[in-house]
Image (cartoon, rainbow, N blue to C red):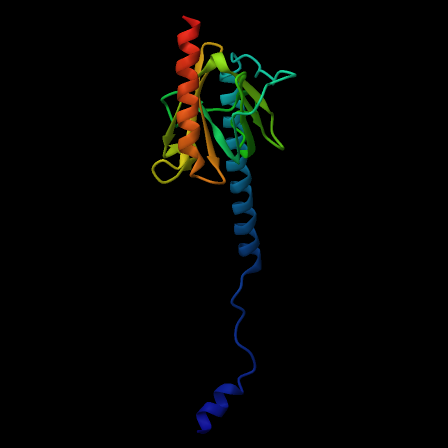
Length: 187
């Protein structure tokens, strides 16, 4: 037992940490993270400038009419129609947010707290479907309401998820009926 007591009585173990090297590595890592963030931001701005040809988003009319359907949920973004990874960021369409949707005979009103609201006139709606993903968000099959609409010369898919997913089917049926009726009267 004497050797154990002698080991414990040793004055002090050697310093393990080299603070200068550790601080250098931390500073390097922070600079790398800042560089990656800056590059991501530049990419977002570049994508926005490429999409600058999109016209301004329409706003809701003074009297939008009686609500056919309403929904609270999340707005997950917009993409070029049929290309679920080609995110559109111009005019704030790439900003994810809470959303309040209201469908009237005049069109679809999209109210987004903290982001830019917009309105899709009924004549511009092209259809709706249930899908599993849009740029930046992938869900279970049928977990996302995707509304296709025309903006300028571009067809756009916008993805929404209701707080009550059972509402999605009703929205798809109503929007598709509405677009069929609108197309029939426009011809």
